[in-house]
Image (cartoon, rainbow, N blue to C red; front, side, top):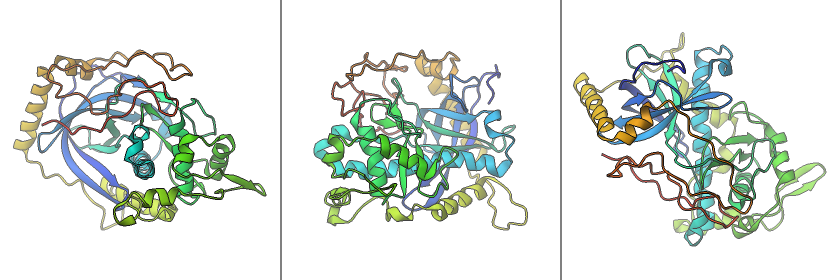
Length: 388
């Protein structure tokens, strides 16, 4: 993939790696993908490409492939490059595991304040001419992105859910980590940053205790914090502590069957050792280490006949849906709109994909905007399944 590539995209075989934060294990699945040759958007460190994916069962969905720019990798070796991509997926998966606990604490009666993080995978392109090419993939999120806070203690909007969620992650993890840099569409978030108390793991944006302190210094508890039993952080002798009267763990446990906490088996386990163990497991799947007997080769089971069938089906699906074809092949970048007004109002969000049958509609579509400042613009809807 290159920002200067003018060739038409072609279906490619790939391995998709997914991290399970609860089982602390990586799994892989074969699929066929078609990635646009030109990026439709870029950030400071990555190019964003429109893509389409179909798995061995024939389920398909649009997505976004994110590729780090060459200057962002600083001539890193193979293992370090792999680590960067797997780190992105792990960070977002861990953030989402806390979002599930956050939703439990809120309860079904407050579903309008629930939030989730987009599932991020690592895609390992293994076709001819693209061996060992890596990228991160996530669902195609429709609507206008809004950034709510960053990793340096700044608050960008007045919406309460993102701030309460960041506060929750610190308190629920027993002050070990804090999820911040919250951004996305509605209450579907992506590209978070995690600060750990010791500054280890979770990528280059992990500012450690300094980053945690900056958030707590600027944070003002809101109605959502109170709703789920978060206590106002207290600073004593230059160090932050959980305030008196914290009930967030009880809020989660009381809404879990049997009173047993679901999700993260033990928040205290999220330390450098756990993180590094999962990272090493991932790297062995995509790299060959000298002198390491248990290094894994890509597990390719798809037959040539299956590959050709899925490639043909993917091309047919794209040809049948003109809007989807435009999504994949158009190099134009989406026009940026001004951020929402301080009162929470904003223009109606329009879909970039409007198929007649709705079969390729992204499940991550923002709903109608809300004027409730406790909510981000657009209440999230439950993700749909990939179409078959």
